[in-house]
Image (cartoon, rainbow, N blue to C red; front, side):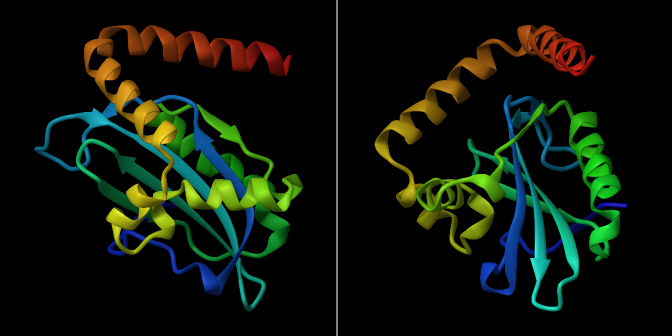
Length: 171
């Protein structure tokens, strides 16, 4: 259902953001066949285009290399939104990501602005993304990257525990 596309950024003037999910964790995955694993974050974006059609983008960002990968689902109508979000979450969870709904539709304008600023898929030039981050965000990202390479074996246990807690909270 989700296919990798050649673009690495989303031209935002064409879209309205309906929902935004971001990964809580940074698992180690390979950006492509034959490349070494790297820490990655995932972003799931539900967007509405000017014709009111809905599109879902899933972005993988590799902070160590700055590599970005975008996946896209076929365009659909709003009636299928719930099912398609479930499918998108399953797609990223299969890669080891735990997703957090940022409640973009309910966020205040300044919160929306901050969320948009910290999404690498809204920048054509990745260097502009890094410049948009605050010093605190850059330091946090570097600290997470350094600890992730050292704690790779613990990552599987953490993912299991986080998924277990997420399932238990749904009951």
